Each structure stands twice: as structure tokens, then as C-alpha cells.
Picture 1 (cartoon, rainbow over the protein chains, first blue to last red):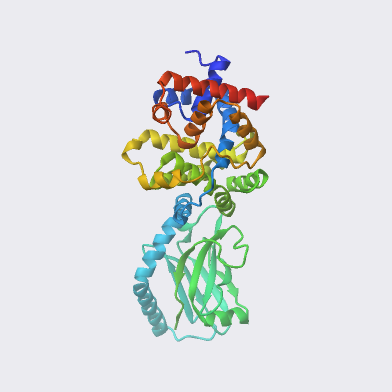
Picture 2: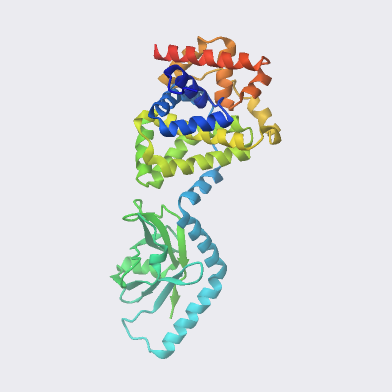
Length: 230
Length: 180
């Protein structure tokens, strides 16, 4: 069959777009489209002619779960993180206990000096391997974030943002988390320090590069950790 | 639905990896496209699956859109329709007709009763009105419901050759009218 005769190509393209071209004829035409710009162009023209028909249909909102599934599929990290969150929650008691044991071990070995950290939070992945260690000193406000294995969970073009979770009110940003390199130090303002003292814990959300544009978490909360005092 | 300029901005941002823009693109276009999926597949589960797959594809291929493909709605509609047609080919429709859905959609407005929205639709509507009743019905049913020649024969009982000829002539007339 000579596909390249314009009238025939036009006819085939129309039936391809309409969907009445089926089976092996459809597959053959798809192969032709891969080779021939004329065939692709004929299809694109027909799409523009008849696709507006869809606008005559009464719209129907899809169930909400569809967007959730799309979101998970386009962002495997989030899916992984959600399972990490689930894992973390189910093991939170165990992890917290381990952190407390660690804290006790530290306090037994060294007497806490003024200026030394007296609060600790550890973020773990789903295998309970540490990702970040955060220490603070509740008097000086010094906060140290040490990335341990965070590079392994880094996402291209996205940033991890650290949040305090006050007992009341909205999460408060504490800045972006480093994913590699050495520990980063900062000093919290008295106001933020006060929020931290009254927080239930810390959380990390996945945000656009540069952090949340709204001042509140816009991406999924991917990790959580309690604050342990010692 | 948002206008095409706004959809183009959202699609361009989506191509840059902006998930918030993609979410807005989805919010703006998914009701129309889901409605199409339900009519073509007549099965809620399949419609959800096809919509999901189509939007995953849109996310990954957003940068491949160009103006030769028509406006953004046209491009999105093509992705959804071809995905739905592939799905219909892979599954025997008679195995999974969702009776409940069939009953429900049949109570909705007849696709032949147009709700004119854009200029392109207006032109298409006018040109479809120039066709014979059979030509118009066959073209709308195959587009909106994804029916094959055999299925169209059950709706408008006529020999296969006649059905094919009506569609062919209908498409030719439609094209002449739209290009006039």
C-alpha cells in the first residue's frame, strides 16, 4: 500500500486519531509515524481538528486517590519516604529507647558542661540507619546538624527542610538540611529556642530548591524524630 | 477549565520539574479527561488506571510538547485517548462492562447535545452539523466512546462496508468544512 499518497495518508491519519483504525493496521501506522514526518504531521492536524470534541463532555472530578498515586509514581523518593515514615512510626518506640540509652551512655561518660549539647534528635532511614544527627544546647541556642548518610536519600532539584513541631500552632522552619559535608552550626534566636523547648519533635519535609516558598511545609513530611533531653 | 495560555505556562513549568504546576495542570484538566476515560472504557477502575498512566506520561514527556501538536488540551487529550484505546485493545470490553456505570452515563447529557465552549469547538460543532445524521453519530461515538467498526455496527445496524464508508465520507466532509 502506498501510504504516501496525500489523500490516503490523510484518511489513515483521520481513522488513527478517531480510533477506528485497530489491530495490526494501527501498529503498522504507528511504525510509519516513527519514520515519516508527513504521517506524524497528518495525525497532529487531525488531533487539532477533532480533539476539541472532548470539551463538550460534562467534566467529572476523578477520585482524590488518583492524584496521590500519580504523585507517588512521579516521585519514587516520596514513596520510599512514606514507607520510611511508616517504618519509623512503627519502630519509633524502639528508636527512642535506643537514643535514650545512647544519651545515658554519653552522660555517664562525660559530665555535661555549659555550652555542650543537652538535646539530641536522630533522623533514621527505613532500615534505621542514621541520616542526620541534630544536637542543641537549650541555654545558648547552638544547633548542630550533622549529615551522616543523607546523601543516599537526596533528591535532585529538591531540598530537605527542617521543622519544629510546636505543641500548638504551625510548624516552624529551622532551615534547610545539608545532605553532605561536615556538620553545620547555627544559633537559634531566643524566640525559636523557646519554640523548640515547647515542641513535640522535629520533622523534615521535601521542598523545592531554596525551601518552602510559603513558610509552611508544602511537600510531604518524609522524616520525623523526637527531641530527647539529657 | 483554564485558558490555553495558562495551561501552556503550567505545562512549561511541569517540564522544568515543577510539581506544583503539574498539580494545577492536573486540577484544571483531569475532570474533562476523566470524563472521557469513563466514556471510552465504561469501567471505573480502568478509567482511573488510564488517567493515572496518562498523567505519569505527561509528567515525564512534558518537555516534548511543541506547537505543531496543537494547543495543550489537544496534546493532553491525545495522550489520554491513545492510552485508553491501547487499554481497550488489551482487554475484551465484553468481559468487564460496568453495568452500573453504563446506566449512569447513559442518563447524562447526550454527547450530541453540545455545550459550546471555545472557538475550536464551535467550528467543529458547526461542521459536524453539516454531516448526515449517520456520519455525525458514527464520528462522535467512535471518538467519545472509542468504539470499533464492529461495535459501531451494533449501534447503527448496517453492513460493515457501509459503516466504514459513512465514516470515511464524514471525515472528508468534516475536513473540508474545517479548512474552509
